[in-house]
Length: 114
Image (cartoon, rainbow, N blue to C red; front, top):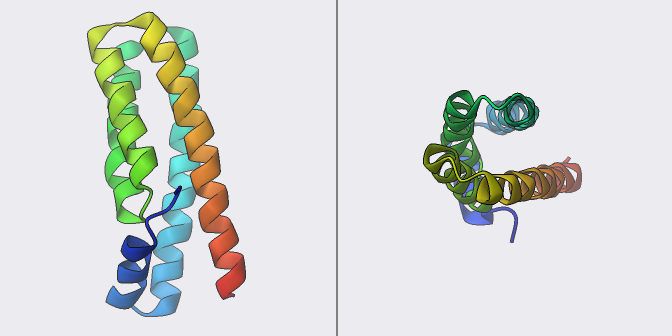
């Protein structure tokens, strides 16, 4: 499952629908930007910055119910910290796939509820 529906429903229950929609949209945009930033940092070999960028994705992903994405971002943080290039390459690739899938899943949910 790409999205924790309980967490997303709780977010919508905590605020009015327009504000919740705004929070989700801003979080999705920020995650997409940070994913691209992580990819650029990896290609430049800037592992400390990559670790920080991936770590910053965890709270945002958790906020909107992207538990799997948050977990994979944590894996990227650990691989970057360990300087394990092989594991980092695989895990960063997984982050991109998971992120795209999670963003698509939330986008699809929003289209259903609109």
